[in-house]
Length: 492
Ligand code: SF4
Ligand code: SF4
Image 1 (cartoon, rainbow, N blue to C red):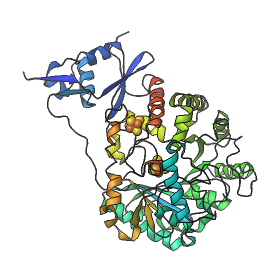
Image 2 (image 1 turned 45 degrees about the vertical axis):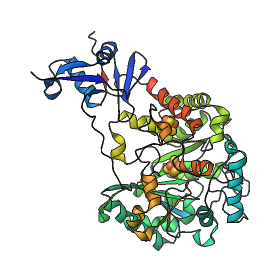
Image 3 (image 1 turned 135 degrees about the vertical axis):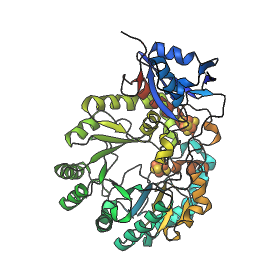
Image 4 (image 1 turned 90 degrees about the horizontal axis):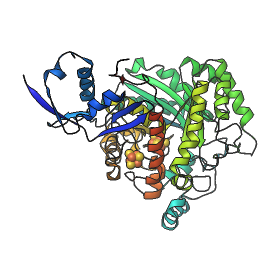
């Protein structure tokens, strides 16, 4: 009989989860729950254990062998031979963001879109960024008077009157070009997001795109549609089309009592948004409420957003946790986790899921090698996304400042240095992340604020890390048996 020595992987992370211990591989995931005897089997490999090769190759003769097979398949037990690396994909476009309008009928205090319509010059904005980096790096704020952007190219695109509105025929052509780029990177299903500003200020272009591409069959592509809207411009016609094309509609709302989302003329936006939500509900649309937990919504962010979601039939609340590095320094990771978790728990009680970039970390680590399959961690801008402006320019994201090129370049866009720099972060995090317990799933803070604060996309904003790790742990600690693979060796 042949034997082989296996040892507990240094990448195995354990977290107590009620009566079980949760364990996962910090790069590959495979989260599972072990009872005490199963955990003892895992720990039996700490100093190394030699087992018959047949244990891993044939059908398991007992439950302990079955457990060892499962732990080895997850990379939690490794042999002396070189570990198998998950496949690394190169160029791959999974998400297409169409910027339909660089304009908005709201004046939210934190929105990176809020700058349009202001009297300003590109040079003045660029100087302001340079000054803020020099004087107060922790106080970089994202608001109407100091946007999150950080490059001359970005400001030029924001302020150019010729880049305000995407023409319907351009929108169709851009999507054709983008799908060709995706297909060339061997992708056969994409997400297309209607984005802005407020995308519904340009309903005609959205309509033209939906009618031309439908579910994508004609273009040999499976298309999942979504939009992020403030919800104030939803007519019967729009709600009907969103239902027909199964467009996931994320309506930004914050909190029923929040004063952070006034209309441009200062009036309260709530009644208009409620009307829009009711229309979507009546047509049976897939609706998520988008809320923000930021310095300006801190006092209002509470359970009432869950009650509102239930009221309008939304099963999901996407929570954008502040992109401003100063937010994490001010409130601290632990306090932010607690604030958010209270609402997560209430959501569970009422049947509403709270999601967001922070939640995707947990979701990805419950899967096994899910990142190569999906194409990105929790930031699609890192190599998986094209964000197309009305004039055809492409950035990595509406939140980002690096110009990748023009959609008319076709696949040459992906060969150029700016895209390659983003794609290199798809799997590999920057050096400060080495060894972090969630390295395989967390892409760090949103690109926009990183570019603004550090003038780089491969920076790590460590003040946000406690929050990312803390909220992921909370999810793991609250797992109940059989919500993920559960290995119980104890016989009752
Ligand atoms: S950004 Fe922070 S939390 Fe995320 S992987 Fe890096 S070190 Fe870990
Ligand atoms: S850059 Fe920011 S907004 Fe864009 S995908 Fe990444 S995390 Fe999201």
